[in-house]
Image 1 (cartoon, rainbow, N blue to C red):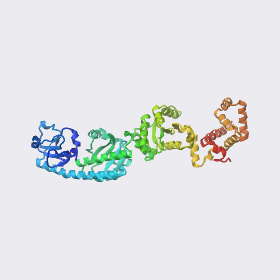
Image 2 (image 1 turned 90 degrees about the vertical axis):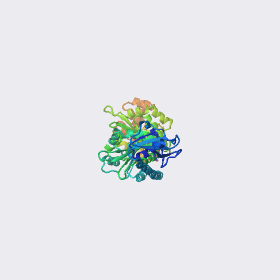
Image 3 (image 1 turned 120 degrees about the horizontal axis):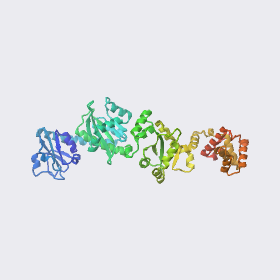
Image 4 (image 1 turned 180 degrees about the vertical axis):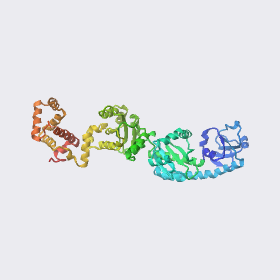
Length: 530
């Protein structure tokens, strides 16, 4: 039993110790004082203190009770002596102290039960349910993103703030603001142990504890006095449960972005847990994502088959490089939401803005290069409800066959691969044939069979509209040769390169053939002309 708990359980009005570090000492309560009893706290009298049996460093602690006021000369006692004062008689105080022997045994049993809960639980929900039974009151476990990781017990239904927290799955910003403004969070952080407070509106007592692991803040463990009166023993038990919750949060990797574990808010948005736009906006705001601006989504992939720890490090690299971004581990990749700021002008400059933001970020590009990673970038968007569809774009980019055959760029932008993406989607559905103008396919086959260049000529005609000289130069042929080919295209394939629809058919089909792999289409392995 910690010294802090011992003092909380005794009928005292004040205590005097050498330093606050002693409060965390785990001690055995003993009815008699014996010199040299290390790790033991015993009740002594002022006469014991003034005798030669004063405990020395390495011994246990002598607890000296004084009824009434304590002389100022004893306000700074030796390290292994604690003075306490109160109004109870010495005999009543001794009875209260002796009851601690039984309570310490009960605490040890309940601590062991909590530890068994931890060992037997495979997730935080199961741990919270079992821990609530041992603690005797409902609990809420949340992470650094204010996401509720688990709840258990009969949560008070007459408290709208608590009910909303459980229903929405997040501790609201108003609740966080109240805890901060009232000084509760700062007190818990400075003391590093749980604190009990009372809500003046409904007289509900609540215990707030910060979850730490390896000295990093991992979240919060809150308990509510509903079915069982919270005592000093319960506070120590809740502190122990809090430390076990920290172990589980670290093991599961759900601490949140504030400790470089990725944004659990973004993960929930990508999972589709929020269908209402207002809820999505509110939770992205909790994750410190700028609102009312334009975004792109990045999907960063690295070593095939890599696990969570690998991608946690990838996320930290990416997050540090792309300032103002928020990331999460989603599937076998790191997904990053990047703000592009507000759109400038009436046109659409987000493509250029995005390319400039990403490609000119030396730190980000170096991270990709040095760690053999690639980033797939979605179309820009302003509506936060498009986060999930934009993730699908990134996944399709990664899966597209065309990208595997071509040059493996470190950063792949969706808008630069649009035709490949269309071809890949239709190919996957088995509808590639619907995309192709069969006159253009026939032209490609004719070129393959006869060694001609009619399709290339048609494409240059579209690329350099109204400029035969530039088209001929691009083809590296004389202008007369260019005009001859254009006329033959009309004669052989019934394509009029002066007609807008035919020009569109040539351009679109040529791009799709390239994306599909025109060998299969031209050789007839994939398609049959009508």
